[in-house]
Length: 323
Image (cartoon, rainbow, N blue to C red; front, side, top):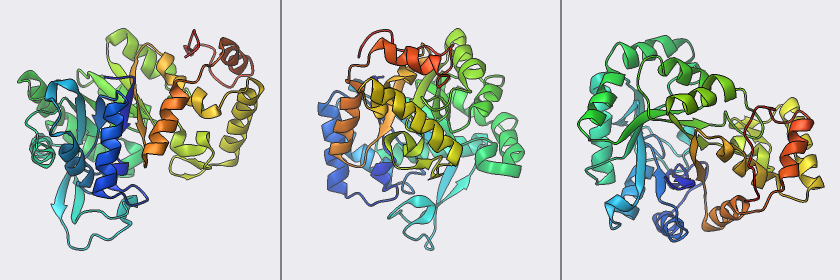
């Protein structure tokens, strides 16, 4: 995986529409910039993202990039789908239905192959398992994944080399700790839970992953945008205590004359378990800005100040040299 991966939810029209031409141009620009890891999911745009990713990558040499998609939702035709459903500007007429069983995982994998137009998928993540997604239905879906054969399906796909790696694509670290007791996971795409803003997952998950050779792909490094100034945290308006902490982080960065967003993007990559950072972009200009933040030199004294003021965990690995 490259240091930066392109998260392709925006290709499915997350919150705002993206044309097919814009989607293709974004993938082309990412490729020219050296990005070789692309992450999508059936849920993104109700299958729209997978179709666009497949179309944009089909002419590339297959061995030159890493592609991941997700399982856990089966997409079924539904004429009642409307613009704006689940945040998708113009979703295709398919409605998601959760299914983490052996048969559900296998069907989802085969459906993704067809939408992508590809025989091979490198990484298969279980999408959005956990209490934050399912509430009081979590135990039901966890049973499907563990006792109903979901993890067994993933293992079989890996064992027969249909995929190269398996893991979770989640927004909560606790379920990842539970999953590591049930399955041999290669990767965990952890969105929003190991960031400049919060490191609660450090010891129970990331340090354990480093010891167990399970790798982390960091997602949601801006915590839904609050770390780049849009006031959103976990897809909703940021609570007062979160906004106050962001203001303190920003004040320290200002003292060192560096962008808060650059520190937010570079921080998780310092952990030895983290192998890539997936970023979303709704335009080429936005992707260019993310790359510029990644390449912004940050003084070691910045991290020392953040730790001294209790804004990042003292035990958190930090970049040792300027980017």
